[in-house]
Image 1 (cartoon, rainbow, N blue to C red):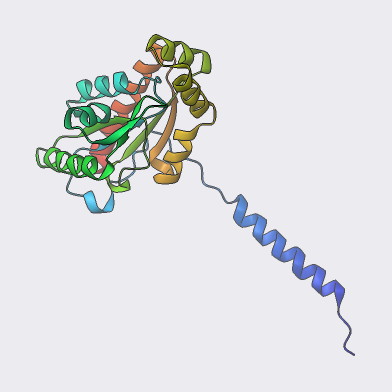
Image 2 (image 1 turned 90 degrees about the vertical axis):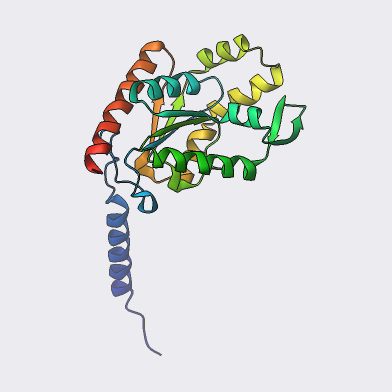
Length: 221
């Protein structure tokens, strides 16, 4: 009977373990927002980037997106308004006091709006509390706004949200649901998490986006 050389086996296992750890530890640093990635492969004809600003209801998406669009001369698409204006819904969820979205009609409508903006050489800023329903190719930057729980709670109370709706959104923020969705739906280098608790935070975020857009335009000229 052939005997097993346990010393050789152990050496082999140790080498496999070391090589495995080496590959795991070879982690590149995440790019900062100032390091704008190139345009998506199938949207190279665009001369201006498209930006998605997302986060839990109450974190300041629409206010931030509106200011970004104003500063840059971009088109602002508030998805919530598009849904209401064009009745892109199939019914209402009474429990959470929200509509049941008709995603197909919404996405078809937005696809045309984004194409028209590209033809006009104009960038677009989209804001919505969800992000995993949009095609990845649409956006060059995904900004996920976050807020402290006490700040968010006060904002939701001010909006008149029911206790059920407040609890749902608070849990969503604490569990970082939107952030995880963004990271799962888009390339890591275009997703950026930022705080949105004060007016100073918002101003700083808008300034950073402006700088990012300037770099994107240079890199994709």
